[in-house]
Image (tube, rainbow, N blue to C red):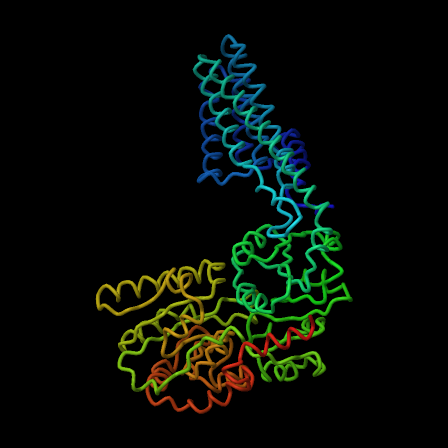
Length: 569
């Protein structure tokens, strides 16, 4: 069985587009179609070829602009290109002796363009089924390149128009159109072959998983660029020493996970495709976020469903009532349990298991007071803006001022923004401003700032922790993890004033607070004085460390998770 996909509606979408344009220019599908229709009409009624030249050139320019950088999807602007081909035919028929080669070339090019929507629908049916799974067949190739087909077809339209306006070399138009149609047919054959391979893999999937005998699965569905959610857990799930596979729900997630593990990865997009992956040997399913599609797997009551989450913080999503649907919630410490109760989310104690945060097992503990460090290095790790207004805790809009204040005190900076910061144009600009500021200061003063790919790709979060002596962050799971180091930190109050901040976000009791509520930065110097100086909250951090991260011996910290998870396998 295959899941329905958006691309499969492109052919019917083109038919609707064609009907709209054929009805006249009352409701044109796009500006390029209006201009192409104008070129066609002027070619038919104008006294000279030159009448149709301006709109034809403008239509081609609009197409080139829409397709700049090669970012074109097969099956787009079909009507506009058919109108331009019709214009090329009329230019020869009305204003000159129609070259038979040009006429045939226009027809062939038109056929090539018309194949695009169907080709795109077939190509969208090409997707991987599994990777690293013995007995499931080879992993299907990626979808054929329909963008290349559209670009070559566009070239055929351009050549046809040039030949029509110049009334020469119609054979060139025929040759280019024939090549375009040939490429479209080749790509279509390639797509059909790969669809067949995908279907063959699907028929073998259940038997292959049954023979593999996995003990648990990891379900993951998330937007692109969110692989950190599952990447932080895979090493520990692998350390359980049991067979498992990762179940993902999009091609993007599939490609991301395949690069992270040697365990089998299975892609099932539709709800009706999941029965094939519930092998008899499965005992449990782990989840690393609260994606809506988790519900598709939770319906299998023969499995124990365990939510790991991808961090612990005082954010609103961390006490979402949706956590009730899991059999077990593995949490870092008692703080996570109390957070639900404090926010009116009633959950029985047996739904929770304290396992710590195994990801911090290699985080180094502070060896002395920060005041003894001459030029401390400070990690600035702001969060992103969140999906909704009530979860926007990002300090990035005042980040430059914070960085300037740190640099003025002789600090070097490690800058690691949340990966989702790039989802916002405004936050992306602020990140670039900070990187530029740090680069300029590094050149001018030689301070060993760390930023860009070095901090965000080459280094892990734990590496950034270990490379710093203190941290500035927001309401984020990064703060709770940093607490393990016992190093001082500052939290930036964005969603509420600083006076209300510790009540709303209890972890702030262990940190110094900068008030950025309403976009106005207050208390910066006082917070940095405490952070880099006397550090009066050192003992408070040590106490809250057990509350947030579990009272677990350091030499067996990650083992707690492994022991608790093994109980359900």
